[in-house]
Amino acid sequence: MNSLSWDNQHLKFAQIPILDLVKKYQTPLFVYDQDEILSRISELKNVCYAYENMTIYYASKAFLTLAMAQIIKDSEIGIDVASRGELFIALKGHIDPIKILYHGNNKSIEDITYAINQGVRKFVVDNIDELILIKDISDDLAVDLSILMRVISKVSGINTHKNITTGHHRSKFGIDMDLDFDRVFTFLPTAKHIHFKGFHVHVGSQLLSNESHLKAIDQLFVYIKKLKDMYDITIEEINMGGGFGIKYLETDQPMTIKAFLDSMMQKIKISAQTIQIPLPHVSIEPGRFIVGGTAIILYTVGSIKQGSPYPIAAINGGMTENLRVALYQANYQAMLVDRKNQMEQSYTIVGQACESTDLMIEQAKLPKLQKGDTIAFLNAGAYEHSLVNNFNKTLKPAVVMIHQGIDRVIQRRETYEDLISRDDV
Image (tube, rainbow, N blue to C red):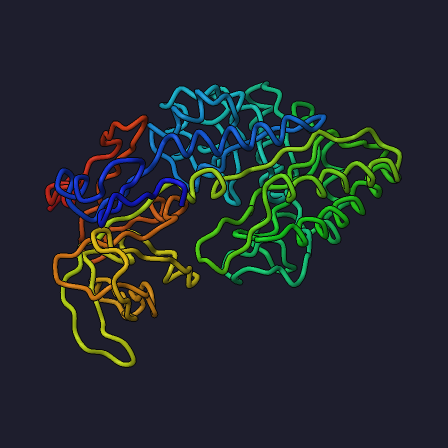
């Protein structure tokens, strides 16, 4: 991680000693490096804006608070949201609704109406029921909307965990154009306030190469050509989603974002030329790439006991702050923050939840641990906070952001009173 450095035997994050942060804020604790987030956004903009026509939408499901929304606003990129809650936070963060792209596979009448009334004008349509619903609402409100149709790319052999693949044949996301192509494009002319812009596709998450994206482009252009030949419709935009992987372990070797996008853009350009259409506008939805490598989660070591094959060290958190491990066996590197260059041994790191799946790292290489030690889970900026939960009625942790050497709380730690604030007898 770029944000980590050692000062003798003490680990620092964004130039602040981690033990100082622990003393000030306690654990469990999320700590984000705002300068690293800005650096990654800058890298993306430098790469993407070198192409003829590309838009960046930050995938807010990766991490979203008011502070993060403000960063996106100030960076002048777009944002995609997949729920009314994400939209609410984006708007409260003063993001221009024209820069918001509304996702979701089960949008309600209330969701769509709220979004339109707030000024959102662009939707990714997931299914035919939703297309009909948006048509009816836009007619009632007499508001013009732009839409992208999310399609199932039917890419096989996607090299990531099965629970975070989205482009396979049985995906819950998108329209099967092999079944519903004619139904969609005979319906669209009846929707006078809907302006069809093009297609959206997403193949999966944490992809270290762009092989699946390239296959998805091939499939998209089958539909694009069919649309041109049968209905004389030429698309204006292709949204390739996100999924750009980052380095969690030393063995991970992700493509650079430039290499990832270069061959994609070249393939889109050649494919457009082949079927004789203008080069479509291209949009992407990076989330993990922007925030994944910019944060750590800090924990305190509690009980340590003998186990097989390794000693078992429990931390004061676990699946409550990081559900990714239980959901799809995500891998992490952990570091002890105050002892370096000591002989390491293997530990099984477990959480404190009353649940067998609360097993965080099965073979963590760490110096000999003691009760009270602080360990950091690295590269913990994407989806960990978004999936925080109150299992066993634990308290959600605080979130700290560091910017130019100054730390601040951007989300306070929950209190026990918060746990019953919505209860009634």
